[in-house]
View 1 (cartoon, rainbow, N blue to C red):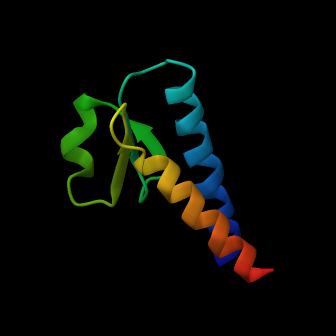
View 2 (cartoon, helix red, strand yellow):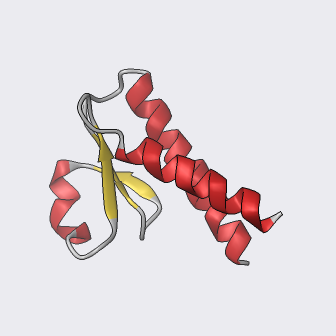
View 3 (cartoon, rainbow, N blue to C red):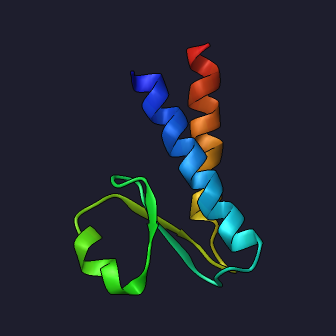
Length: 76
C-alpha cells in the first residue's frame, strides 16, 4: 500500500510538472498531503500541509519527483 501511495503521488507531481512545462502557469503550487495542484484562492486550506512549488527560479516539484523516483527504485 505504501508503494502505491508513492506511485500515485509521483504521478500527480508529474502532472503538475507538465502543467508548468507546457506554460499553463508561471507558478505551480502542489499540496503533497492532498496530492494535487491548488490555486491562490485555496492557499489557506493548505496552510498546515506539506507543499511545494515550481516557478522560473525554483523547481521544488522536480526535486520531489527525483526523490520519489529514488525511493521507489530502492523498494524494488
